Amino acid sequence: MLEISGQVAIPDEEIDMQAIRAQGAGGQNVNKVSSAIHLRFDIRASSLPDEYKERLLQWRDQRISSDGIIIIKAQQHRSQEKNRADALSRLQELIRAAMVVQKKRRPTRKTLASKKRRLEAKSIRGQVKSLRKKVSE
Image (cartoon, rainbow, N blue to C red; front, side, top):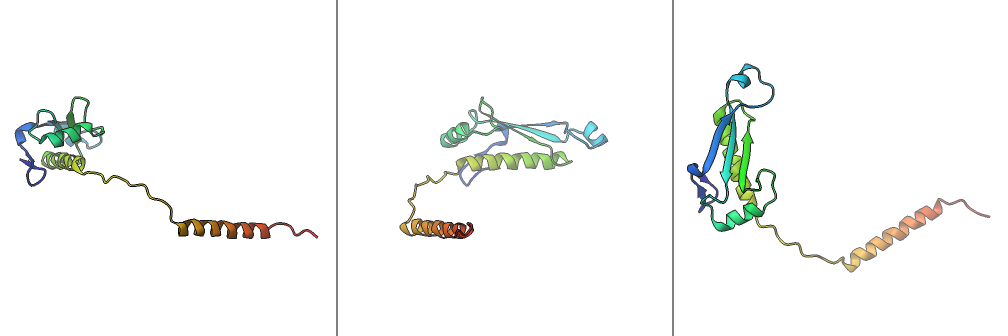
């Protein structure tokens, strides 16, 4: 069971994990051992609440395919177990991040005092520049 929040958890059967060979340098260990983890999670077929599913499917993320499948590849660690734990924690973070509701921005107006300060700064700057001019007789 992958715990998302107090009320929501994902059963292990819904998460498909396969061990694959990791990419990059590493010598014999990389060539012999399948230590990387390829995690696949189908959003539509999951037991997540409908609200979670809708948010995840609408979310623009390169890890979510057009079919509604989350694909995570974990290959940072040398051991398969650490990569498995890393992939599960990244899935958990992704789902939690999708559930955070962004506060709607309310446009604000500039205050009268801030307008005055800006205009005063402009006029002072203009005076400084005018003092740099050549003195005419």
